[in-house]
Image (cartoon, rainbow, N blue to C red; front, side, top):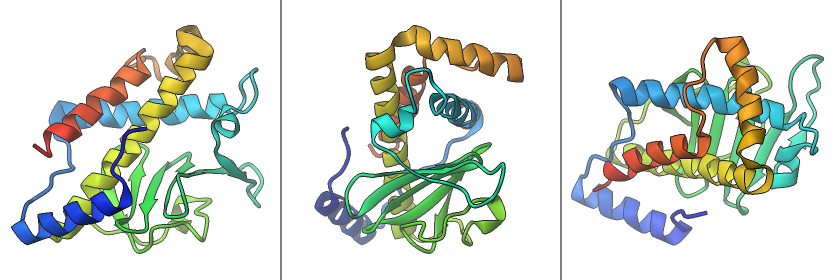
Length: 208
C-alpha cells in the first residue's frame, strides 16, 4: 500500500508549516457527494464481508475484532499498520490515527474529517455518543495533518478493495451491491476500487 512513511510525514508537515501552505482536504459539490455516497456504500459491503460464505473477510485481511459488551451493537474492527498507525471502523463512521499526525473521525454520511484529541481509540466508541470530542482543523499544521490522514484512510479502502477483487472477483462484490441497491434503491458505483482511486486522485491533485 503506497503511503508516506513516518519520517517523511513529519518532514512534510514541518516544511508545510514553515512555508505557511494551506493543505486542502475538503471536497465540494459533486466531489463531496461522490465521497459521501461511496463511504456509505463501503461500510455496507464491509458489513456483508463479515458474514461472507468465505469467512469473515475483515479478519482474513488482518483486522482485529473486539466484541461489543452491548446486545445488538456491532463488533469493533481495527487494523494496525504498525505500533504508530491504525484505522478503525464503526457502522457510523471511520477513525484514522497516526501518532505523528493525530487522529480524525469521518462520519458515514458526511465525508468531512474532524480532529480528535488522540491518535488512538483507547475507549471504544460503541455508539456515536461515546466518541471523544471532535473539532474542525484550524491551523496550517492541523489542515496538513488532516489531509495526510484523509489520504491514508482512502488508500486503505483502495487497497482493501484491490484485495477483494484479486481474491474473490468482481462478481462477489457485485452480489453485495445488489443487496445494497435493494435497500437504497440505487448503487452509486459498481466499481468500488475505481471509486476510491478517483477520490485519491482528487486528494493528490490538492497537494500539487
